[in-house]
Image (cartoon, rainbow, N blue to C red; front, top):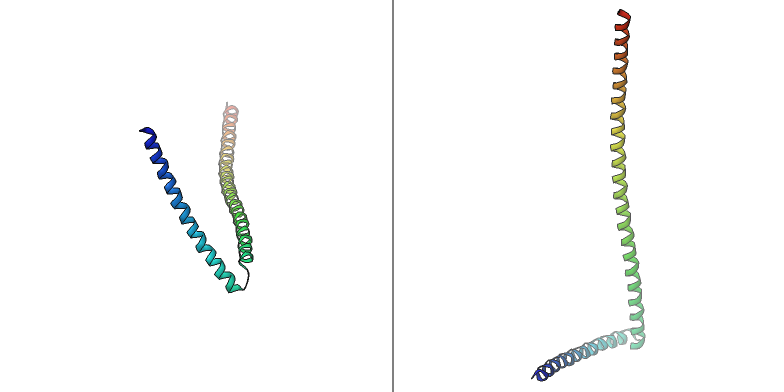
Length: 126
């Protein structure tokens, strides 16, 4: 019983593959007719047209690969620009913070000088 089920499944798979092969044969026949028509229109043998189509396909693949490389380069460049902007923003933040700290340090120095003057005045008055 198990073998019968397995054979049935395999037969179904075989039938589906045979149907798919038949559909592919029909599609190939259609494509060959189109190539033959194009070749006749161009006044060239079908084999020359097929060779040209293969060459064009190879060129399209090369161009597609080159385009993909360019897109990757552009993406990397954009990411680098974002990183650079983050770095610039960080530098601006640090510069602003440094200016604030310098102003605070100057105010502290002035307060220290005033305090020293006050102490000296107190000591001089005693």
